[in-house]
Amino acid sequence: MRCSVNQVILLAAPMLVLAGCASVSTFMHETGDLTSGRTAQMQRDAQAKQDVALARNASLRDQLASLNAQSGRLKTQLGTAGTELRKVNARLAQNAGATQAQRDEYRRLADKQRTLQRELDTARAGPPPANASAVAEQKAELDRLAAEKDVLERQVAALNEGL
Image 1 (cartoon, rainbow, N blue to C red):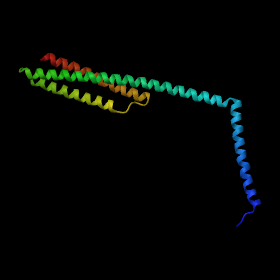
Image 2: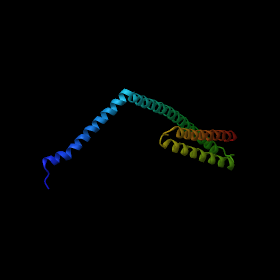
Image 3: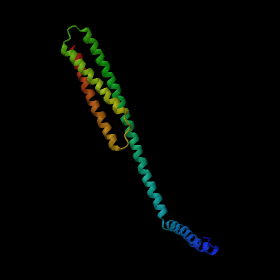
């Protein structure tokens, strides 16, 4: 089946016309956007969205820095509590009059300190929070650990005074 030149022209002509119409249509659409101000409005909308996203990112970075600082302080304080526990253990070993209850209390407090340290390490090892609710959750967890650490420090001090 051979096609003549006329047949090829008849088949190709509508495609060329349609291709030309498409480019004219795009040109008219873009020209219409420019004259109506739609392009400028789209740019302003995009800039506003970008500004909101940048502000949210800055806020999350600040919150993350605060969490990291709180976590670091808590880690240091738990280390201090562990040091105090070791001092109590040394006093227990030197004190022949120490009761079994005091020794049991020491072991319970030492276990609690190790548990708190593991929980803090787990919280710190996780991925950084990606949104405000995740930041709030992690802050609540650190606050809970800090409260338990405070209780632990008071119990260690009480045991130390009892020796």
